[in-house]
Length: 357
Image 1 (cartoon, helix red, strand yellow):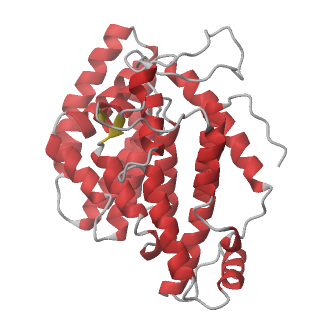
Image 2: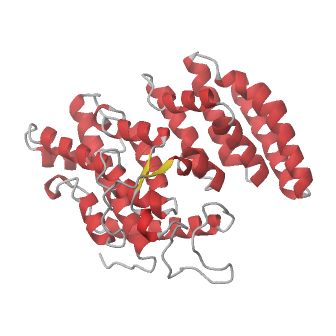
Image 3: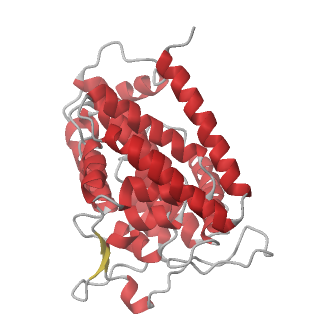
């Protein structure tokens, strides 16, 4: 028979799915009232105390529960209620969730990263606003960043963070990332049709995708270059990125996936801030991590051969969790991450791009 906690989770997810269907099919006013009632009686009264528990097992379990909630919930008002409960009613709760992304326990960190990943995968404006976009800051004294339309230079800069002699993937796999980025862009553009405050310039619903216009933000062109992003979540993610070589592969995979999702958010000011030369930007952090790759690789004999062997054995658990194994696997994750980011940069600047790679 199944353990009691598994049975409880199954019952809970079935109940949540029923609530989601009721809210989806109800009159909007009724659905909104139901969502508020669910948030008050379940999210606040039940999940709230569970999130505050200090025990590691409890923290991991409730974080995984909430990550599943974000996957399960599709009704907009119920989704917003869940986002509001997690991230926008109690600054201490949000701070605790973000700090758990960098916890001493890998299990706690992994669960917290999954929670934020589930939230961002909803592609809701409210989620992006709370976790990232409200932290964009304009600075008149900043030197304008390079033209974001020159995406090829940016993509090459990102790809170069892992030197050619340390790359082990088939070069043709870059085309897969281009294709995937096209698909992600279309999903984001479909999602942002429902956005209001951060709406992008996008085609009317009757225009079929792919769309040939470039996403823009209602910020004057002369000002869009002068933004930085002070998101606490982003700061923690970038701090973990700099420690990629000391972390399990599972954490590096979801960490880089989260950063890529943030880079995909269709907001020009955000794109420019993440790609800028500011020390706390995504690209600057990636370059520093790449410099660490070169330094550490120079101290390892036959490092290229070892990286190729590590890629072949990637789906197998390492025989021993040595620093060398962690480093080799982290370099492979980083190589794939640079291709993903490079593809995102190219596709968002050139939505009809088709590369013959």
